[in-house]
Length: 285
Ligand code: PXG
View 1 (cartoon, rainbow, N blue to C red):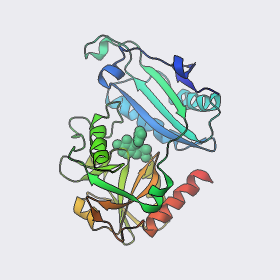
View 2: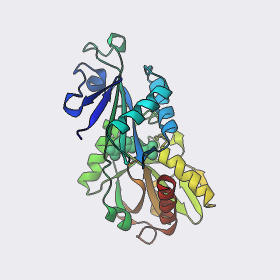
View 3: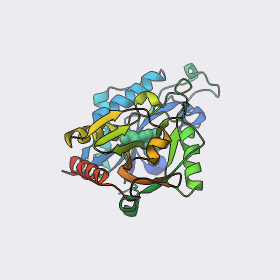
């Protein structure tokens, strides 16, 4: 069955799913988005993703032209129309078509797009061996320039860091914030383990508040780990017992090297393994 894409309340065949070249989402990255997973027909933390989408829109003065309930229904209907049980959902709201100037008042209606597809996962060996990371020289957007808490269509900041990682042979790269602290990776949040303590940078370190990050902190508390949101330096990562990343696509993925320093034993650690297992149970039970 060819995929069907939702645009403004209608389903289009993939090749007919088109928006204007005058859309400010294309011209300026003026819009917001979400990446969501469906497991066995259940959408994981849809309310949290919609809350973040609405917060991102609010922060850029973009009014989403439907209710959250209608959006939730549209997501489920699009999954159903495509017969997808386990997959990936990309929700996009653009500012809409306008003139070639920046002025968003010259744009017409915001476009609401829902793409559902199969999920492209990291290969299994990355989970069993763990990832090597490098620190990108591109720092995360300064929160006073463009808050990393906004999941906007302008992802150049992350893409530049991703290219640096790829050029160094790494599929992810660590990004520091404007203070030189550890922020997050290009599409994943970062955690370290010290003894029975799990530490991740706080939201005001200039990060996206990941939905997976939140779920993993909750699981860690259930596992009776001490969980804290504390500013971290690269040194803290170098000397950690374990390190892992969280994200909608990656779920929980171990990190075994940063900037050619072996972390812990150099193999995925037991607490990472336990949290990965708990996350799998949460999403697949
Ligand atoms: N930080 C950033 C900058 C992200 O973009 C996360 C953390 C993890 O958040 P969630 O809510 O997913 O736990 C993200 C989200 C991709 C891709 O293709 C990745 C994201 C979004 C869109 C595409 O790798 N990550």
